[in-house]
Image (spheres, rainbow, N blue to C red):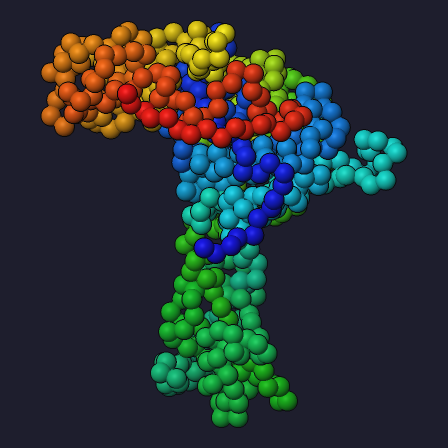
Length: 561
C-alpha cells in the first residue's frame, strides 16, 4: 500500500465511534413555513453531524462554511478557545470526516481559521479531502493595523484564512461576471475594388492594393476588429501569426507597400475571413492582422459578459468592524459580516442548494443563505442558538431585518425553518452497571432511534403497525418494547408480501424465533447495540473540553440470540 503524507498527534486514531442520535423538533422555536427544508439544530455539532449523515443527508450539501474556535488561547465571550493542539486536531478531524460525507460530489468546504492552527488545519484537510482537492485559500483582512486588540502585542493579526476544498473534481464555481471589453475591437474596413484573387497555403486570398481599401477607427463593438502586430512570439503562437510568417512575410516586394489581404477560412471569430496588411512604407518589414471578437465571447452570454478568475484576497476590515449589530444581535469577537458569507455562497452555491454551518454562532450563515434563496442547516451548541440564531432568523423571515445583504439581495421576507434538538444518549447504565434503554425515550423515540442505528428511514405506516421504516421498497423495520411471541411473528409473517423482509428490534422475545421465520430477523435491545458506539450521557465532544477522551476498545457483540 502506498504510504501517504499525514499529520500525527497524540490521540490520533483513538476517537470514539459516535452514537447516531435522533433529532427531535421543538415546535416552540420552529418558525414560518415548515416545509422549506431549513433546519436549526441545538446540540453538539459532532453528534449532530453524525445524525445528519445517518438520516439521509450524506451527499446532499452543496456548500459548507465553518468557523471553528481558533485555539488562540484567548477566551471569547461564547467560546473557550484554549485547547491543546492535539485535542483540537482530534476533534476537528472527526468533524471534517463527517462534513466530507455530507458534501455532494460537486460540493465545497470553506474553513475559516487564523494562523494559530491554520497551517496544521491545511495539512489535516489535505489528508481528509486529499491534497489534489485543495482549491485555494482566501486571505481576508479582518482589521486595520491601527485597530489592535492588545496594545502590548508584538505582532498584529490583520489577516485570517479560509481554506477551500472540493470533494471531487466536479466543482464548477460561479466565477465573477464582468462586461466583455470591446474597446480594442475598434477597426472597421471599407473595401473597394479587388485587385486579384489567389491561393496561399490552401486558402483563398483577395488582394487589395493601396487606395483600394480603407480602415476607420471608431468606438469598439462586436462588429469591429482588433489590430495585432504580426511579430515576435505571435508568429509562432496562433494560426494567424503562422500564416503571416509562412505566406505573407516579404510579399511587399511583390505586392507593394500598403497591401491588404483578405484571407478566408482562418481565425476563431464570427467572420469567415481575416484581414492582414503588410508593411506600409519603405524600410518597414512588419505587418498586422485584424481579429474579430472570439466566438466564445459572443456566444458565452447574450449580454456580452466574460468571467474573471476568483480573487483570493478580500479587504473586509471595514465590514468586520461594522457588523456587530447585523441581524439585531451582538456576538462580540466571533461574528462574521454577511458580505463575507454571501461572497462565499455566491461562488460555491446557487439558489435552492443546501448550505451547512456546524458552528453557527450568531446565525450569520443561516441568515445569509435564507436571503440568498439557499436551503440551510445550522448547528449551534450554545444557548445563543435560542438567544441569537432564533430571533435573528425570525426577523429575516418577517422581513424586518434591514441590515447586512438585505438590500443587495432584494430580500423582503418569507420562508421558515424547523428547530431541532439532539435526543439524549439511547443507553444508560443503571445502578448495577447494566446498560439499559434511557427512560427519556418513549416508544416513538425508540423506534426512530433504532431505525437510525440500523440504516432505515423512519416512516411509520398509518395502517400497518409493523412497518415503521424501510431501507428499500421491500425491507422494513419494527421496534417494540413488548415481549415478542411466536404468535406475533406468525401473524406478521402471514402479512409479508412476496420478496418482503423485516427486521424486528425488541427488548425480549421467545427463544429461537428467527429459526422459524426465514424472512424475519430478530434482534434484542440493548444487546444488539453494545460495542457499536459510545453510549455515555456525560460525554462531551464539543470544542470546549480540556482533556482527551479515554476510549476503551470493545468487541462487537452478536446481534442475535
